[in-house]
Image 1 (spheres, one colour):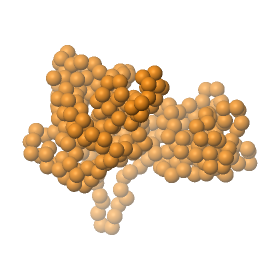
Image 2: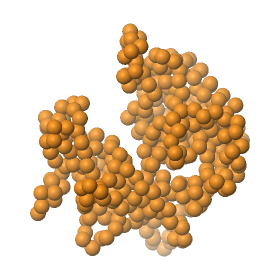
Image 3: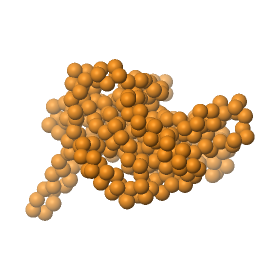
Image 4: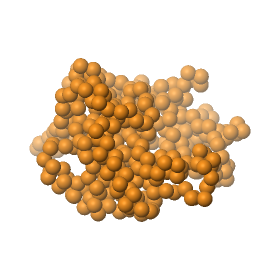
Length: 362
């Protein structure tokens, strides 16, 4: 057994969901070059699968449906180190009849949160200090030598006694529109990244969210974003239009957390039905009250995380669980020391949640 295999065999597993043909591990090295060892991981590739399928929808290659996507996950080997080290992975997904195939490549940063979680094991052993920098590399090992590529992650139901269960995907209600007609009357906001799905936010939604954030004072508050999903076949492209926000009644909020309850969802669903415009839930919004010490100098704001918009670990968890669709976004209103209530938009990008740009429209 090689040194690499022994490290993998003795690695500590982390919870999650992995492709059935490859096992993954993260290799850690301290900044001074000291090799710490490996931690086995079981990545959840579902958001990558969903992102790949949605990219096919945006390109006009795949049917516009909401369903748990399935496909093939294959490691991309590192150019410098070679196998088993990965620079990322590739996802391939197809239509049910196999007539269309779409693939997307994902970088090593997809594993960043798992690497951060695993690093605490080295901290607990006293081999890393809290806050100490480290390097990590992702490794992949084939489960069996006769498996040449990652097998499909199959979510089809097995036949039951006497009958079979057929899962019918839910159609995404796309409104045919001209993207240029939206951009011509909109203002670009926030950082723009090539490949992001266009998002149009009504300025009234931002104004209402800022007002509710002020009224909430020291506590967080939030709500649900509703609107329509459009397609422009001439591009082709899919984009969303957020036309309203529904304040989250019965939500659980404190000075540092915000979460939805069953009553919140019931109220939001009732409000959407009452509006009667066929709108969808396109995401959520919440506020961050001023976390910064009011006595801090303006010079310190530039280097302070709390003085800029950020998504906390709890925010990321809520978005992953409650708003997992690739087209769903999150508006954050941060009470910043330099500017007061300040909007920022977060959303899915290549299977992870990132700050992103958007358009405002009156």
